[in-house]
Length: 423
Image 1 (tube, rainbow, N blue to C red):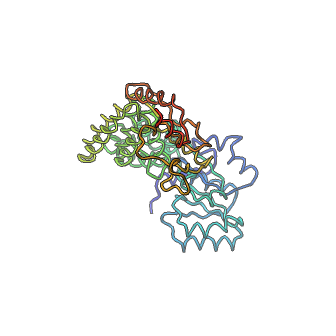
Image 2: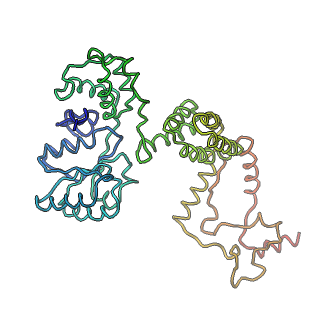
Image 3: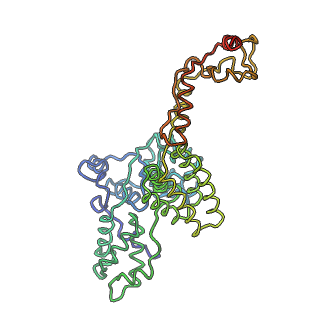
């Protein structure tokens, strides 16, 4: 079996691992572990090709700890049980687990007691955010270590290292600067992708030189480098919404393009509707309908034409006035309910018991409805909704709110009814 280039030149020391200086420098936590001959159960999380599994193997080798590799997606229960049995016979084992967030519940239950008593030292690797994707029971027994996206300089260093490495191309292959830059740009911070592309380009090299033209003829599309399980996926969605919220139409279209390139229409639909209500809201309520029409049109025609409808919606959302007043208002109300729970006033209940008729809510008295206190006494002075963007639409709402605020609301329905009868 021919080993891939990325496997053949895999680093064997911390100094060879690029891009994670915060972990490997003099004060880095992983270097401190090696210096103190200590190893703890950890979850390495970060983007693809950032060195998570490689680092785990290097640590185990440097600390002379026996280890076994296990993939939570492809590995089975029998394989995992065999690792546990081996750990018992050897008095401990390091388990390096790729895709650790995919470990099913039964296998998690089998793993937990071995983590608890220290028989297994787990080093899990994942592209997912461990705060959401990792079982809390496992998370509480491990340390979370973040790996950063590799920079273009890091990827360039890794490519040059591969060209010089005795197990790589051993200085028998060179690359044009323009071709190097193309691989670096296409890899999007993923070293494995870069090395795979380099290995493919080597097959098409003329006179042992990888040229730009030769690379272009075989190079696939740019590596978008995110899946729905990865942090990059959620980071892109987050940047998309924040760009629209910040009225940066150029960035908004950029992140839309990234999502389109990943063919992720479903996420685009959900995010655009959320943005229309959450960020634009009452400043431009008619825009919600136009966004919905654009989404339905894009779904009907599909990609690539669907990009046009979505781009129209995104441009208008980005350049529209913004108001988060409704969103902020409901969040304040939820916070109040969660921190200060109250009972519904008797006169607002559907079927109040032991309440005199004069104290009950009167469905026929529309003249006093706007004078009734609807909030419980404990929170009657709380302010949840505050107008933000005083454009034509929300200015009307603010004027109505100001007029209503002049009226002193009352929980004494008997008195309200009586005072109005006397007028």
